[in-house]
Image (cartoon, rainbow, N blue to C red; front, side, top):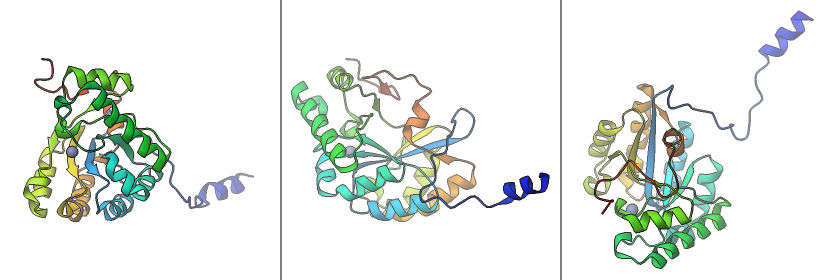
Amino acid sequence: MAIAAVAVTLAPAPALAQAPAKEVDCTEVKCVALTFDDGPGKYAGTLLDTLKKYDAKATFFLEGQYVKTRPAYVKRMAKEGHELGNHSYKHPDFTKLTAPAIRAEIQKTNDEIKKAAGVEPKLLRPPYGLGDIQTSEVAAEFGMPIVLWTGGSRDWETKNEAAIKKQTLAVAKGNSIVLMHDWVKQTVDAMPAIIQTLQKNGYHLVKVSDIIKHEDLQPGDAFPVPEGWDK
Ligand SMILES: [Zn+2]
């Protein structure tokens, strides 16, 4: 009987069509959350292939207008274990909108994401990372905390593969939330090298929720706490 038990133990695990989500505790291991704004961008498919290849998770703060035109990418993001957040419908500056207009931007985007992927976003990232008390109040109505970033890749500015890699690795430290864009081709091109380096340095690439879950954020709270919102 003992031999049989050993044989069972040594039998290879059956290949799963989709790997189960691994529990990563970011208080125990080094984590980085790569976040991609304004998408799904036209290079999202290539980015998803790369993330899958390296078993990395990411968070996508999506624009409703592109969810509507590229729903297949959004469906794939959810299916492959990435996190979907709300980044407004058409990217207006929320500090210049009325509360009903902000509400409509958030609701329309939630509706498109739900339609495309069957999931409802739990997190909001306002366009340009700009907000104020009114933004927080509307986010709270939706039950959403606001997630900003701890460091930016500056990819939209440099549009240079080497510069994006250098800047991303410079800001990717323990429990960092890094801002990137999947409409920047050079970002998507740089991603295999960025992921390989981070993983070689012991980082787990996780969803932003894995990092903020230890922050006890309430709906309407912003993290990291932005300067100049409380006025
Ligand atoms: Zn944006």
